Length: 168
Image (cartoon, rainbow, N blue to C red; front, side, top):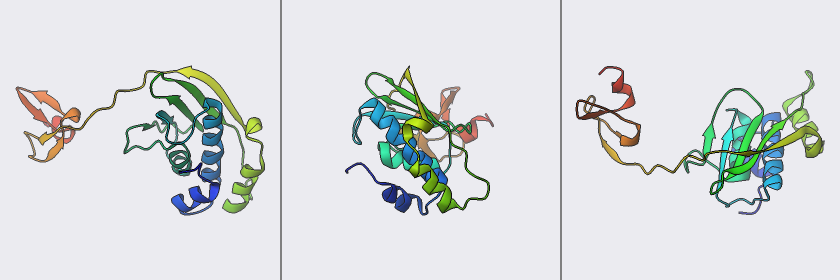
């Protein structure tokens, strides 16, 4: 896939809004700083869990399902994007204040008119990228439901899912 456009992000997310445009601008900025293209082996940590996340997934190609997008929802307009093999990359923040009287569409257009270099800041980082875990499914000794054993807790030689662990 070519580098996604803002329209691709809007189509994926479902509507045009400031959050999608902030995520689009921030993730494109991060990709440019890293010299990366969609499809490269990347790892992303998003410090938000809102409209911005959809644009980040589409632009970077990092998704929760592939295990290369970690959500750390602490409410900051920040993301870390690194190369999976080295852990080297950038933590990018975006500083943009929406006018209180703007509509979603007006606010979105304001972001797109801004120069990314003026509203985004990139700081070089090197992080430990988590190893990919391959799912290994089994039955919980408590409830009997199938679950990924990587998420389980062993007690007295039996393995329990996270829901049942509290009851052991």
